[in-house]
Length: 303
Image (cartoon, rainbow, N blue to C red; front, top):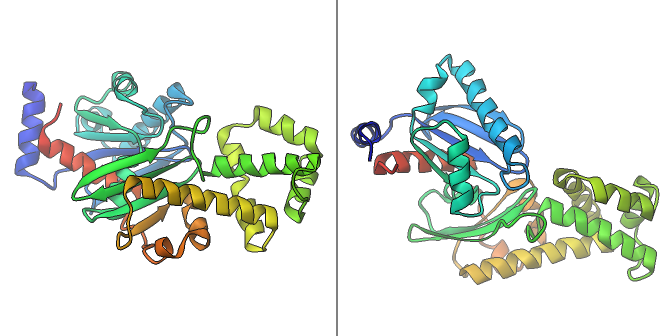
């Protein structure tokens, strides 16, 4: 450990409420906070996914740091010297974490994907589970302080029950109605009208960004709430993905479940009764989880 890192670690041990820097980035938002879980300043930036757009994510983080410094009237050099925790989408392993650390100016930083801060924020120190469905998706279980995750592999190979998954499934199912492999519904007809037919759907899907396809998810939820058969089938399929993933991670009756992300709560009515009975509101947002993890990291004195 360097002399500087040792000094930071010792200061944090003696002042557990000292300010830290936390970054929580996902497919829709990147939030950057300075302070503590109880008292902090925050800026909200655009998407930050280092797998789908590494340079864009780095620029989003750097821009957020500058914006936060302006808000705090604090020199950038002071902020980047603080103990920092970064949890962003697309960090698929140690190599990507190391690449991101190298691209950023922080002197004392821990980098993970965006799942640990979401789980810590939702549950605090309690045992429980999380089903996070936003633009992407993942599942997590916390037992005895240990965290275990599944999913989060991105829209190409995973992200089941996510906004992108649901939007893509809606477009694909609508094309199946054109082929006669599914019965047409009011919802499928509305999508055909929206994109000027099957060719328009293909053209849109070929060039659309993940967040543009994910933007279709609310219309699926609305149609399902009106008992549209196709939309209902899609929501039920998403709920089945959630159920199977949580069961594989070790969820059991009696363990609380938080549905997070912009889409998570929409699956509530479609989940099995045993899961519905344990659904509870998240204790806090992922950025609070990131602040808690930043404080843990600083106290541990990890370099």
